[in-house]
Every structure is written in structure tokens, then in C-alpha cells.
Amino acid sequence: KQEVTQIPAALSVPEGENLVLNCSFTDSAIYNLQWFRQDPGKGLTSLLLIQSSQREQTSGRLNASLDKSSGRSTLYIAASQPGDSATYLCAVKGNSGNTGKLIFGQGTTLQVKP
Amino acid sequence: DGGITQSPKYLFRKEGQNVTLSCEQNLNHDAMYWYRQDPGQGLRLIYYSQIVNDFQKGDIAEGYSVSREKKESFPLTVTSAQKNPTAFYLCASALQGSLDTQYFGPGTRLTVL
Image (cartoon, rainbow over all chains, first blue to last red; front, side, top):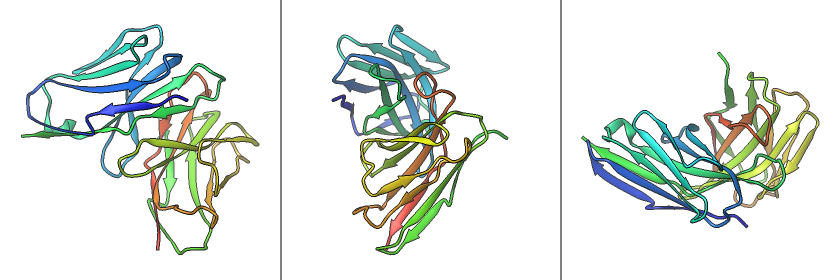
């Protein structure tokens, strides 16, 4: 059974710092991995999607990497800003079947202090 | 504007009552999903539907029911059989279930009084 873990659960950094969020998964047979952002009381916004054949994806100040063999992904945020404060969730989609089912981690709540 | 809407934003229920959460999308997506989110936990899949008039149970379907009579609508009923229904409920849709990114609605927060 696939399990997804995110560490740390919470992170507080001063504005301008570069930071890394971690995501690990137990079954390397994944179709893709996705990073989402969630603001308090809101839905999820997709940030980056990495296919199983890819090593990384970049969008602006965000860079996500994927190492299937070790069951790990990282989300790198450069030059953090107070507007980056939110909960970040990673989710994997398995290879078995075609349900599109996503397995989510618990999330990392990020606070960027001005 | 295209997107996914959920209503209501907040919902209060007395114990023993059934309530229905609405999810509508105008993205012409085939697949729709319902997730539950509890504090400090990730999202867990309740039900999903890949085509009209067909749906499957997710990981935590007990105490919930759904219907998919129209492509754009996927309502979720929380029945009195659900022992701990207080949670944040999120609906999502995708163009075709297995391959495409899921887009999420704004969520409904259900509180049982």
C-alpha cells in the first residue's frame, strides 16, 4: 500500500531564504508526482507535476525534483516571500489501474516572516 | 468563467441528519472525485466517477453516497451512518481520470453539532 510522508510538518523561515520541502513515498511504481499549494480554508492549486520519466520540473522560483529509486521528491523555493506562506502537499499517482487516484502526504505548513 | 464550484462553503448538521454537498464543473471533464481532509492529515479519497452514471468507492466510502446523473455534477451525501463527518470536503475533476491533472474546488467545511 502506497504511503506518502512529508517532513517537516511545519516550517518557519525569514523572508528571502531558500528552502526545501521533502516528500517520500514507499512504492516507487508511480505514474507521476504532483506538488500542490493550499491556502487556509481553500482548495488546492497545482504547482508542479513530474512524470515518472522526469527528474525535475521548474516554474518560476519553484523547482521540484523526483528520485523514484529512493522514493523521494523535493520542492525547492528560492528567495521565499511572505506570499509563499501556505500548506504544501505532495501527491503520487500509482501505476496500477487507471483510476487517477492520488495518494497525498500530510502537508508541510510554511510561514515566511517579513 | 470555467472552473469547479462547491456549495455551500460552510455547512452545519445535527447528528442523525443526512446532508448533501454540491460539486459542479463547467470544464467538460469526464472524471470527478470527492476527498475528505482532516486537520494535520492529507486528503483521502471518498468516491470517484470516470463517466456519467458510473462511480467507484475510494478508501473511505463508508457512510457516504454519490450520484453522477450529469457530466457536470457529482453531489456527495453524508449520511447518518458516517460516524465522524466533521471535516473539510474537496471536490476535484480531471479531463480523463488516469492521465490528467486534477483541478480542485474551493471546498465545503462540514460541522456536526
